Amino acid sequence: MTCDAPKQPEPLRVLVITEDDPLYVIRFFESFFPALPDSLTIVGVTVSNAFHEPMHATARRMFRFYGPIDFVRLCARFAVAKLTRRSIGKLARASGIPVLETTSVNDEAYLQQVRQLDPDVIISVAAPEIFKAPLLALPRLGCINIHSGRLPAYRGMMPTFWQLLAGESCATVTVHEMVEQLDMGRTLGTLEFPIHEHDRLDRVINGTKSAGAGLMLEVLDQLRNNATTPRELDLSEAAYHSFPQPEDVRAFRRRGHRML
Image (cartoon, rainbow, N blue to C red):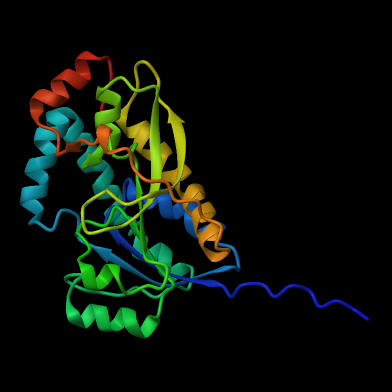
């Protein structure tokens, strides 16, 4: 008598929602797409506009954040990325992954597309729009997000910046369950990325994006095998951070850190 081999789980069906960022968020996907195992099937990628605001408003926000010299340097990088057509959508198509267009991930027309794709899980990678209850409820295993900060202490925007400003020795990358309240779901996995005494925001953002791809792959594998160990947040540490103001940037520089 022979024993049948244990039946392997079906490939996990994953939908990705992210933002159009050819400088930093793309680093995640440059590591993520080439490393995809056969046990994962990416059924689609949606790339939304960053900040959901006009380009001139984003430019004003970045000018106040980076200052004139670094803003010009950043614009030069952005121009090169655009001229070379570097984009997350292009990476997805090159990997044979369909790109789903929408003006809002909460629109009923988009939700209907998602229902037809029938993903097991939706992952948010710097998604610029808050997921409302109907979208959160669609996938069988829920929605998960990757956040470049320790939760719940660094909820909100630009967690890498705030960890550098606070003098943390490491930036904590967190994959967590998504709930209606922003950055408040149970954690599924973390990693620590070392911060130097005098560091560059640019280096830490790039490093956490690349390292985060591996963490996300680990969590997705655990989800597929029903092997996750969710941890509740310690709400005594909860804090929310908004986009940094010029005075925050001045304090950041006084610590000996640089932007680029």
